[in-house]
Image 1 (cartoon, rainbow, N blue to C red):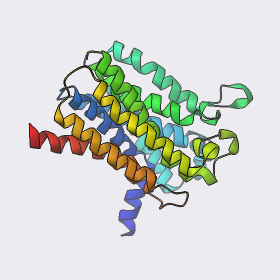
Image 2 (cartoon, helix red, strand yellow):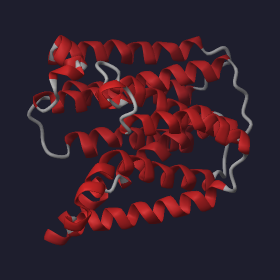
Image 3 (tube, rainbow, N blue to C red):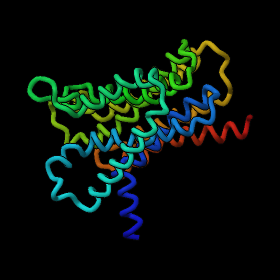
Image 4 (tube, rainbow, N blue to C red):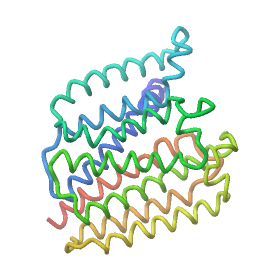
Length: 276
């Protein structure tokens, strides 16, 4: 049992779970646009996500305490190095055009950590912008970049999908902000700090309603699969949003909330098998 717990912690702390969530959203995009057999790009996204997230979470720790790293942290460092090396190798199979569209989101990820602003601030420490930056990066990397990679049509439907994905990610970040309420510096001015926990849940609920209603704005005939899957994932997201509290189980956010994109993909796969 102790070994299983250690493996699970490594799975979470090594950003493997969040990387799978990102891959799930990329695949959701591919399925919505009828695109198949993009396994190399999915692996590319998975490895890049592990590299980026571990860079954001652990770069300062590795730099300052590399001589005293725990066994787990050493494992995460090895995982990150291997993921980064494999990501670089696969990058040669991605077009220059794709990299051009990826560049702004990579820059935002770096600026999220590196203190380049006045008073040695990074984007993460700027008041009130944290979850919106994450929303932009996730939306760009799971909708825009995959469609550019396959030379998809960036039309009105694409724009709506980008807005929906941004809203979805912002809502997914709200439970994390509620969880961190007792630890975050007041200078961060997070949404729960500004309006309280209950109003944060109401704010997230409004965003989810907009997320759902935007489906009807798409200019092409929607399939019953997309409509039903959007309703289901909105319901699931509302359930986890309202289940959020300042005192929550250790893995409520880092496992269950981050599993919602994976649930979305599973819903789509099941619905396609039933109705196709």
